[in-house]
Length: 352
Image 1 (cartoon, helix red, strand yellow):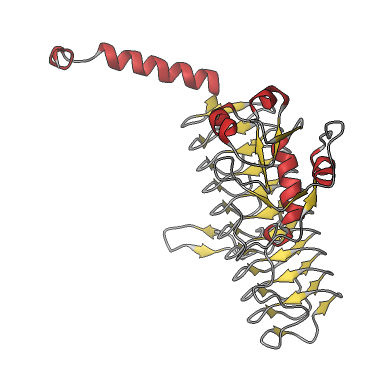
Image 2: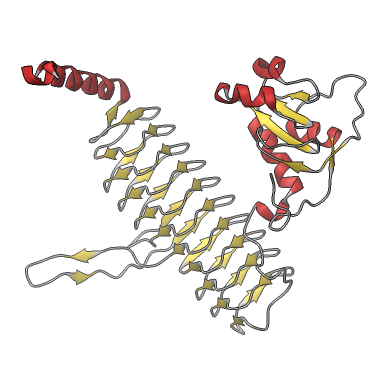
């Protein structure tokens, strides 16, 4: 159930509006002005709530739900109980996301912690910085000299924006985040505690000691990127670190210097990408994947969680394991090892 303290609904939505957002068709003769005021899980939904269903694992919960409306894929529509309206959608989850964004706009991105507008007197904005109309600056924010912030962007409490940094329009920088040596496009979300643009880990190592190599590149973040809490993105050494349009990065991810990430990639929590690696468009890295440096992962490839990638991955591949390899090869190896281990048991093990 949505919490009215933290996320107050912007107002009820009619069934007609919900159907339009979800790409569903209202059944003939139904009153399209019926109001829906909230959203909830199948198990706890009430008569004013919207739910969704597109996974067979939750079939029993669907059959018992008390929700007023359910966005549902066609194959589960017959399991929607009497008293709950089934709105059939090709993509129920995406439709549900669109409805949530309309019902609870404050939950879609970091917002002012104080409900503020304009520039708080408790912040520091350098006189040479340029802010377009509608920028919100919370208390404790520091905006350095020459920085440029686009219209309708929100800088939440404690954020630090470095000298010369440029942030586009409609962005949100979460509380306590720091953004240095970075150029950011429009509608970018950076969550609390993220560190963007600090120097990368570069040293000329030798017997006389490790000599620090100055990191003189930038971070380039294109439109519609989202970066999770406490994620770090190092600036480039001699070229830029780049994150492509529409890419989504989870919490606690490390992206090293000179990494280039393509468009619409998905990078899940605790991934580490070493320096000068390239991810082409639409790559997916599961949680805790490690990628060594100077590699290329081809377009559309998917790497299973907890894998370690130590060589180039061809486009369209599905790899897993340590070291990572094509999933069928990985599965055969695991099956073989299991068989060999079973054959190698001591007689007393079988006796048990």
